[in-house]
Image (cartoon, rainbow, N blue to C red; front, side, top):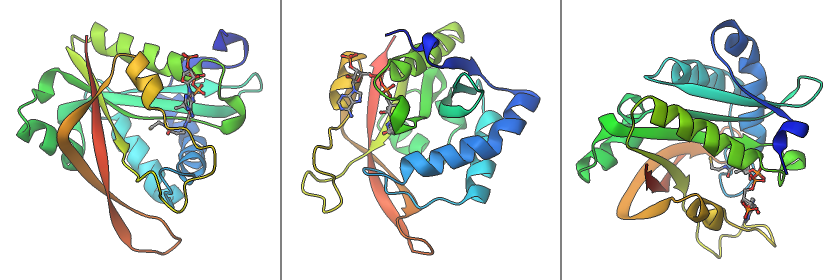
Amino acid sequence: MDPAGLVNIRPLSGPDLEAALPALARLRIEVFRAFPYLYEGSLAYEETYLRKFSAARDALIVAAEADDGAIVGCATGSGMDDQHAEFAEPLETAGHDLTTTFYFGESVLLPAWRGHGVGHAFFDAREAHAITRGYRRACFCAVERPADHPKRPAGYSPLDRFWNARGYRKLPGILAHFEWPEEPGGPQLAHPMAYWMREF
Ligand SMILES: CC(C)(COP(=O)(O)OP(=O)(O)OC[C@H]1O[C@@H](n2cnc3c(N)ncnc32)[C@H](O)[C@@H]1OP(=O)(O)O)[C@@H](O)C(=O)NCCC(=O)NCCS
């Protein structure tokens, strides 16, 4: 289905982005609280993260908006060499050229809006942006959880097939580790994250 009939996908920058920051922060917290991320986020951290992300090299933040203007999803990307060292360094150590690699930060969509092609539209927008800017490949990181994780919901289905169908492959033997709390006020826990990459 064409997502345009349900939501409007548009890039945010400048004052539009600034105005959207609280909504984007709430959205990330809500979506990433669920399995597999189990992220207990704070609004203050999220707004700082997003503002910093938007200033990174070749950054793109696209929002999915419902007819009434409510932000129901977003996706982000930027040059890999202008990203957190936790993500950039393992890739560089493994011999990948960061300057020609575009990094997808995340794609998040409220559950009620899933299944209508917005996830594809998020990839289309970021890949087109990266190709226009001369990048040779795109990559993103996704948390690795054991199949028998106690908080895995019944019927949970990983997104691997979707990513494979988009041409992304999991890089063998390379992981990033990124910390976040899983409980309110809880400790920062290091999470292993796999790299997924596609050449253009
Ligand atoms: C990732 C996400 C944005 C995809 O949104 P979406 O709009 O439902 O995706 P689409 O409708 O474009 O579907 C894309 C394809 O993936 C498939 N798919 C979507 N969710 C799936 C799931 N949970 N399990 C298996 N396949 C799935 C769809 O069937 C579709 O396949 P098709 O092209 O063969 O029809 C959404 O699932 C989400 O917000 N997930 C939680 C956050 C997350 O894990 N983000 C990714 C890492 S940052």
